[in-house]
Length: 239
Image (cartoon, rainbow, N blue to C red; front, side, top):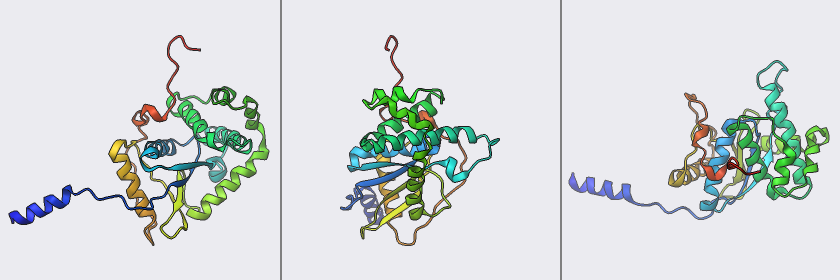
């Protein structure tokens, strides 16, 4: 019995090496208005340097997908978020796709931590060294086609019965796979964040895997977002 326990303890303490070939190029579809999407995106950002991830941040509009009635509580926030995604696509069209993640970080900080949609998009663009005139895309419906095309690419991978976030990467055969989620109310950090990522990748790459779920019993804990993956408020006396 003692020998069996010793073997069990030894196995439990063994560090399993990470398999080679973990995905590096990630597509992450986001709607700035979704707090669940925001938490998942912050988790993925903490994993980036530990798994050498390259993220392409892509648009998905809950306004377009869910088509809320004008009197629905989510109508105004998702409408505003749709307009923010127009700016995202304008930034991408201007050749700055590599700055979209930073712009999302600024949008998400305003919406989820400052609890504000009354912010100046031009100021955020200027803070990133981008042309503030791109903020005119807020009212430019010609960018809606790009948003819808991005959504179509996501839903072709995941199916229609999903929300946000959506994440895609290559499986072990080089085929693109996409999943809804993971949905989490707290952002894991450190080793826990990496372990969660590796587990997510394993499930996504498992043939025949479709879904795992339980009822949500708590709201998104925005205080769990670590400082390094959100914008910090200006210090006293700053402009």
